[in-house]
Image (cartoon, rainbow, N blue to C red):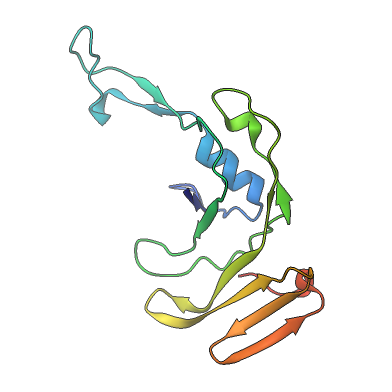
Length: 150
């Protein structure tokens, strides 16, 4: 399963820098106004409605994408603080056994726009060490927390 998380609310000048804030925004209840075109199935009139996302079942593997680029192609430079482990049972429709996700890889874009830049990634090894993969270079990273994550 893939989740695409906004780092910025529409019409908001502040960016999110916390993973939980991004998740809460994704799963928040939104109000659709009458002009949004929602039509009541009973009376066939446009009406105000609410929409929200919930998961029925947790996937074994979860891929999270932080939407770093605006519709104009510029990059949001806010660092995203991502936990090494997290749960989100409160975002399920029905309670499930506890399931904890562990961060084991992430991709970084180094650059200022969608059309310019370079990608590299960090991967957690079975030993618990982290490696940085950058083209044909592989480097062991002793302290992953010290790495910039813009």
